[in-house]
Length: 67
Image 1 (cartoon, one colour):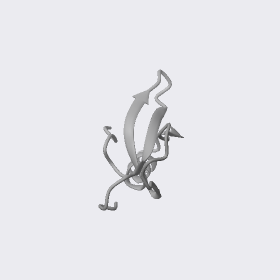
Image 2 (cartoon, one colour):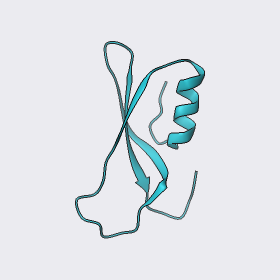
Image 3 (tube, one colour):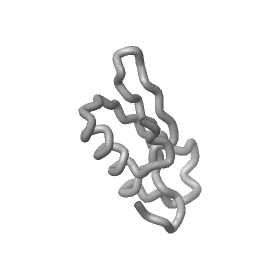
C-alpha cells in the first residue's frame, strides 16, 4: 500500500483497516522560516521493514490546502 503524499489521517485509516502496524516520525525544517501547520501532516516517505511494519515520515503542510 502506498501512503506517500497522503494526509496522515487518511494513511492511518487505510493502514488500520487492513490491520497493518506503523511507526510515525515527524521531520522539521532546520530553520523555521515559514509557518507550519502541524494540524495537517502529510506522509513524505515510507519504508516497510522485514516484519511488515510501515515506517512513515511525515511533515507539516506549508501551503493553503488542507486535508
